[in-house]
Length: 394
Image (cartoon, rainbow, N blue to C red; front, side, top):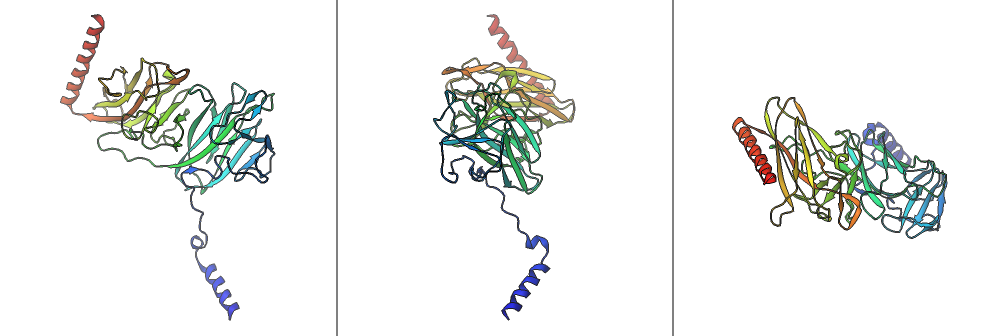
C-alpha cells in the first residue's frame, strides 16, 4: 500500500503543470551580496597574501578567473600599504583576472550594483563591470577624496531570472602586485518613480537610486551613463567624462528629502534628462541648489540648460539658508526637450585641496506656464538680470 501511495504521488506531481512543479528561487534582497564584503573566512581561515587561482573555491560565494588575492587591512605590498575600503578584507584582481557571482533576479527588472574600489600602484587602473549582458569599464580616479577609494554604482536590466555579476581587471601591468582592489559589492532593485502631476521630470527629487552604505561618508559616484532607460538614477543620464556624486542627508546637506546629486568636475560632470513637452508651449525649469556641507570652497555656481535656453546661477544664500531656488523659462520646440545641469567651476574642499566637490542640486521640475504666467516670468527674469548688471556696474 505504501508503494502504491508513493507511486500515486509521483504520478500526481508529473500531471501538474511545469510552473507548479518548478519554483524559482527568491530574487536577491537589497544590500550586500553573499560575502559581498569578503569578510567570510575561506576554508582554513584568512592567511596573509592568499592568492587564489582559477577554479578554486577559496573565496566563499565567488567564482574566480585568473589570479585574485585576498588582502587584509594594513597589509604591506611592494613597499606600500594596500587600501581596504571597509572592514578587514577585500580582493585584489591581478592582470586580466576576474571574480563573479550569480544572483537570482526578477526578469525585466532593473538593478543597480554598488561597489567600492581602489587603485594600488598603476595610474590608469580600471574595473570592467558586467551584469545582465551589459558591460562597462570604470576608471578608478583618486579625485574625489583623500581616502584612496570610492564607492561606484552602475545599473542593468535583468534579461533572465539569473544574472552573472563579474568584475574584471582589464589591465596588463609589468608589476604583478598591481591591480584594482574590490570590496563591498551590493545590489538594489530600482523602481521607476511615478511622474509628478505638476512636473514632467522623472525622479526630479533623486529619491530613487542605488544602494548606499549607511556608514560611508563619501556618497556613491555615478560614472558616465548615456542610457536614461537603464540608469542607477532612474530617468537621468550622466553624459560626461567624470562622475557625479549621489549623496544622502545622513552625511551631507540635502535641500529636500533624503537624496540629492552633487555636481563634480565642472563641465565634465553633467546630468540630463529628456522631458515630454508640447511644441510652442512656455515652460519653467526650476530646481534647488546649494552647499552639500562638505567644506566645498566658493564660488559655486550651476549652469542650467532647458531647450535653447541656458543660464548660470551663483550660490549666494540669504541668512542661514544652505540652498536657494533657480528658474529658467523656455519655449518648447519639440515633443521632447533636454534639460541639463552642471557645475560652472572646478571646486575643491577647503580641508582637502586635491578632492573635487561642487554644488548639490535637488527638486528638479519642469512645468507648463499659461501665456500670462510665461510673460510674467520672463519680465521677472529680465528685471533680475538688469538688477545684477546694475550692481556689477556700481
